[in-house]
Amino acid sequence: MSDCVTLQDWAARFGAQGQLAQQKIIELQSKTNRILDVMPFKQCNEKTMETALVRAELPDVAWRIINKGTKPGKSKSKTESFTCGGMEALAEIDEKLMQINGNSNAWRLSENVAYQEAMNQKMATTFFYGDEKINPAGFTGLSAYYYSKTAQDKIWADQIIDAGGTGNALTSLWLVGYGQDTVYGIFPEGTSAGFKYRDNGRVQMVDKDGGKYWGYQSQYNWDMGLCVRDPRYVVRVANIDTTQFTGAAADAFVDNLIRAYNQIENPDKCTMAFFGNRAVQTYLDILASKKTNVRLSIDEFGGKKITHFWGVPILRCDAILGTESKIA
Picture 1 (cartoon, rainbow, N blue to C red):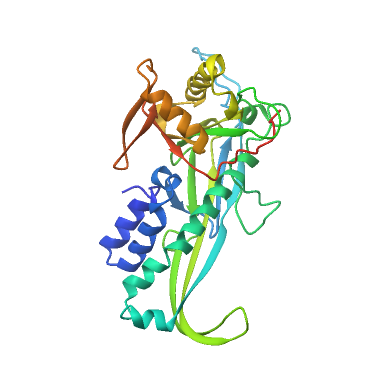
Picture 2: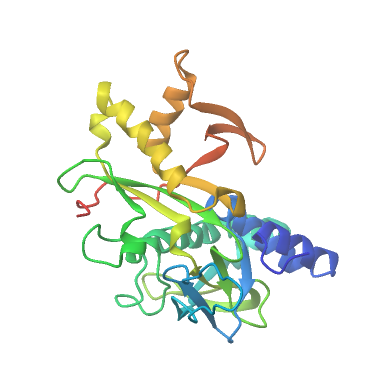
């Protein structure tokens, strides 16, 4: 098995090794996060950091004939470091509730699902909007890499498609081509895919009025980051005004899906997925259901019927804002 696989694959690997607790935690964590359905993860190559060559341009090459040399080409890539952020959640349950439910660890785990869901939402928000310059404890997300059509290097700027909206009530649709040489998640060396669960046992708790009582505490840690090794494998369809999803503007929006697909350098090299918020996905679902539709299909993904564009799943991610400002 490759060492750059989805969290579900990592969970299966831990299960095969008898690490059933780790398997269960990872399976629960990835259950409600569509990003984790498709994003592969690998262990950092430098403790808590992934150092990788990021392609700026392809190197120069030349045809050569006998008795004629060629000038050596220079690598047009640079070394970048991608770091992991760390999340922690402390889940506490009243001892009496545990007793009422038979001191069941399974019940306790089910009650802690809300904490894992909160961590999922935090991860998804950071995946799209994280910036280590603003929050050093997190990791840098896609918007910090693809932020301008005019004020950043061409290899990044070319991956932004302007959908034409103005103002500050806009959204983005992202197309990501995952792979071990393109875009992938990372986790610190020596961890169980970045996850750690600790049962802190019976501890004294304090209510909002200062009263003390006994309960049980669970500690969840999730350390991860994002490596964008090849900028040509992400496309941001920016400046989407969802109030304009009618008539010619609607047709133009679907045309942008074609542009996004063809902007991915080599679709055969990666596993692709679109990510949009609820408004975008709802609109595309409605289009897919119309008799006149010829571009979208409804196919199975992860055991559910969802809309696809040219075979690429369109996944809903509510972390993508509907209040973005215009990207220029």
